[in-house]
Image (cartoon, rainbow, N blue to C red; front, top):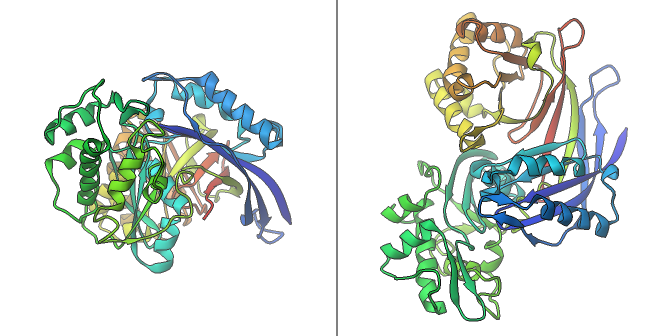
Length: 476
């Protein structure tokens, strides 16, 4: 049976806030005697909002009332009531996710998005969302190649690298169009970020708030930004400027990037030459020109993204209701839990040695961090159908070492296995952790990287639990 549902995606970013409504058609493809297996068979965007500058009360606080007014206004324009929406997502991204009241803003908007994802996305996760929204992940899967998506917004450039459809690397740089703000009438600098102050000093310029600059002077700065982007994708050797502008961590560069794609507000500025270079009162258009003239577009193949500035908008979602297998191990006191992002190991990851697997888990866990605010994360593995006792012991130890940040926090350790192994794996994890950690270990659930899950209270004398797998959809 097919069902038509209405979905909304709300994205509150460093510079802009926007939303999109979609109609999606879902169908239960399971047999009558099986548990439901819901798949999306069709999706169509029916309304795109205007793109607004994200309202702020200060450099550290979002204007929650202002954001809510924007969303309410767009609902009215679309002729849609909050109660009409079946599913969706509200996600705060970029620098905005690090504002003091980000979680309060999310709570105030959760009623606009039905029963779906309400979350903050740090730079790595934001980059992954943007890369998927641009179609970079899907293109890398179809062509069997490596694609890096550079999501260049107002405050940061979030980079995600895809190989054969899987995310293999991420990074974030303090490069963006609104790190320098200009009065468009008199070309006077009205804002200069701390990193930009250091950068302009390194390249021998004397610029401060109040300086009057022409286009040529500002291009020296944006050209240097483009050079740093060349360095991080492997076109040029790394410099001290790259080290300065890295926000969290560098790319590994132990692979060859064949294609580049660009998203974010600056992506729209790469191909468009404005009448007034400072019409948005920043250097976004100049940065776009510097990128267009750089080796980024001359020495790498360029993939035209399906979405640019809207690539981070989560346009639709599906509810896939599953019942976990009969071999589960859960600490019931921590259930139910909602909106848990999935850290999915790839098939290549699971073929590594257990020591190497631990390092991969630890590295990928960082994607979900938001500075000191660590959110719940569920580790998803395929696992062996008939793993030996030694395999379970070593796998458990690998998970514990890789999920050390979760182990050392108050959050439960959540593991989802596709194979029927949760009971023995969960018990092994508990034993190795001296029964001092809450464990949720369930199996017979298939998820993808980037999914979110809800896990309910155990049913049938604690042998099974209901699970809702929620998939973010994009417009490519």
